[in-house]
Length: 281
Image (cartoon, rainbow, N blue to C red):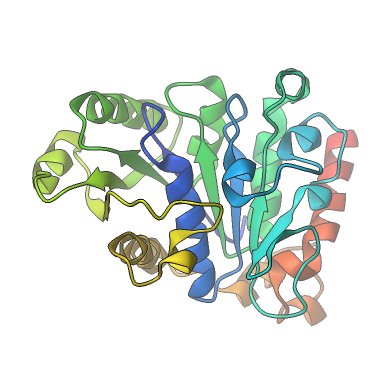
């Protein structure tokens, strides 16, 4: 893999993990990186609904062998979600999941690693929105990620579940690099939460009512929540800043003439083809 992969994890639902994944992706894109947010929550996928796209192929279709990876990409820009890449500039891409029980049953989670690796070969950053709790499917993104970021609220139960998730992530071969504290108030003991989790707090996101089908970093860029997500993006990017040019140069699928172009926008189709050939071969 060439790009950096981060898996967002939580011990329970309702803590803002998917919202954090989308806003992290948008903040990384705004900083000039080709970024993909992947719905790796195969059982309870809701990334597509959050960004306003619920039609077309999904990662479940890819995992079931019913669609090419390139067909499941959704580009997010000022005009909303679309299935075609922008003419120029870095890309912000979402790979949504399906809410259908039949799609969940048909998807092969064993193919998830190939999906993540293919995306990482084309993008600077891949953000995996994983399922809440301890699931077999989460072991894949935890193990392949360069870092796992815990997402929790100040609620004691949420913190305890996040600690358990951290242990599971490490057993799966992952490395917990920090946490995001959501739904924080002026009374929240931020340092106390960090001590209980045993991790560095990378961002503190306050309670916010500005939640819709677009990232807060776009709809309310001056707000405290948007600033928190920009700090999170900066912290993760500064860990080991990826180079798009090096990423493409290291990929045998991409020719030298393509290394200066937007990775996700220009070469995803070819990477998808390689993914399909590997799976079927």
